[in-house]
Amino acid sequence: MRSGAAFVPTSGPLSVRRLRAAFAVLGLATLLSGCGAINRVPTLEESAKSAWSEVQNQYQRRADLIPNLVETVKGYAQQEKDVLVGVTEARAKASSVKVDASTVSDPAKFKEFQDAQNQLSGALGRLLVTVERYPDLKSNQNFLALQSQLEGTENRIAVARRDYIGAVQAFNTEVRTIPGRWIAAWFYPEAKPMETFTATPNSERPPNVKF
Image (cartoon, rainbow, N blue to C red):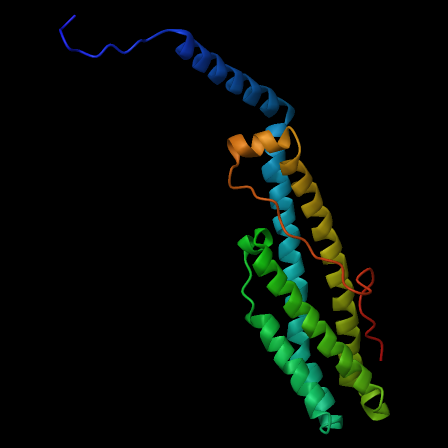
């Protein structure tokens, strides 16, 4: 051996331990893959993201109904300017909150989204209370059509939120418990627990939008 050359062992207790650990991980991965457990984390994650997309779709559907609703009410109750402006501004704020797949794992972004939607719900509620003072408006055919669509949308929002909460609960439980936590750490380190909706008054049922 040449003088001064560094000697790098190719075997020994440390190398053997590393080799055994690598085989153990490989064996566990094969076992988990065979029973489907290794795919459970991404499967539940995609299910939760799909449920989140449906929540967004239904909130957008509600937002799309509001301009026609405001215009219809304005034709009969122009003096209710403050209420109408409140709804319009709340809709603009809710629409300005940017959401994507990362929102569900970002507490601050998720709270911003929920707060904006709650404010819009409150503004709509105040508008619908105001409508009670205008019998002619309540019998307008366009208004009746909007009533039906809005009521249906609120029901869809409630269902979409319920499904999302269930999907997130399943995913979060998986990545926080064993063996899901190990699998996520080894194979899906980007998988993070997701945020969910916090309880609001009467959140167990959709808002009353009957006119």
